[in-house]
Image (cartoon, rainbow, N blue to C red; front, side, top):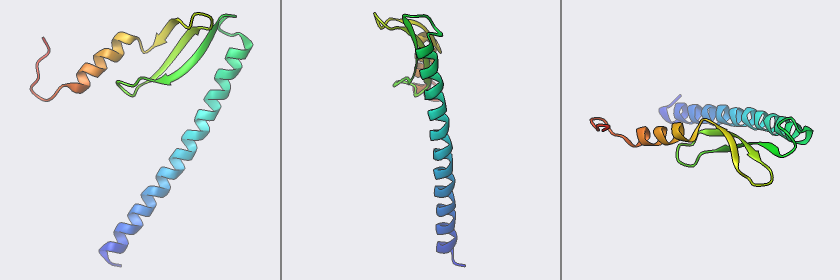
Length: 100
């Protein structure tokens, strides 16, 4: 077997593993979406509240929010906004940078 063949085999194995992980992730996402739908439809958070999942654009971290359906005000969020902004600042630091 040549080096090219080994590389091609490794790349194929990597793509196959990634594809399997993507399939598993998609399945879990569907399960979560269904659970959230049931909670929201069942009024588990109150008549005027709903559960929302999203991703913070600055950090890429998943967000879980309870939102007022009428005003769209965020009632509570995990992780809190302050934690996300701290993570964003820390992510931008380089070795040797100081935090004042």
